[in-house]
Amino acid sequence: QVQLQQSGPGLVRPSQTLSLTCAVSGDSVSSNRAAWNWIRQSPSRGLEWLGRTYYRAKWSTEYAPAVKSRISISPDTSRNQFSLQLNSVTPEDTAVYYCARDTTGWPPDYWGQGTLVTVSS
Amino acid sequence: AIQMTQSPSSLSASVGDRVTITCRASQGITNDLNWYQQKPGKAPNLLIYSASNLQPEVPSRFSGSGSGTDFTLTISSLQPEDFATYYCLQDYRNPFTFGQGTKLEIK
Image 1 (cartoon, rainbow over the protein chains, first blue to last red):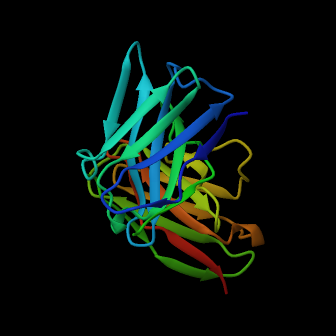
Image 2 (image 1 turned 90 degrees about the horizontal axis):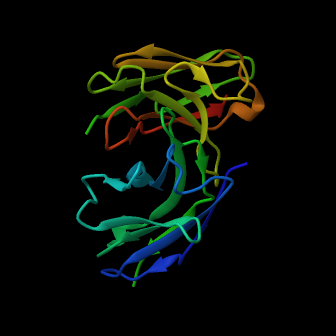
């Protein structure tokens, strides 16, 4: 059974960096079939896909254009986890953040529990 | 980005009713359309992938159809546990995009 466990702070100051980690069990972040996503949800923006990382002979990332200049998603193969960094946050980045797995030909099927991140001074 | 327009945004129905939710893409997405159910405080749960394929363990009262730009999710006979918010998601092209959601409420 695949499980994703999120961790990270729930409060970030404006202009600082939001950092979250998603620990994976029951699958490998280095899998040739899986991809590892970050998705957020807020009342104003709804569900918003932010990006993903995956391994297909080499590591690749894909980011949503809306956050591409501020985002980084990276794997940590030694700990079987992946991370999100979102720079220069503003109150508009306040949301519940989810990590999720998708596999080739399938949409995100396993999700983390969600982390409410509030951007406030 | 591909825009996903979901309707209605909310819906009141009774146990036993048949309900249909629609999702329209701003351009053709073949059958790369998926449906999720979300309950308060929980992550979205995948119901249907590739427009019409039921995820394992999802009850058969749920069904999906469509191709190209127009898609539907149908619940044939509503059960109490079905009252939730439903979202469509296109994974045809990055960035993946969601519909704005349909909140299904008890009448």
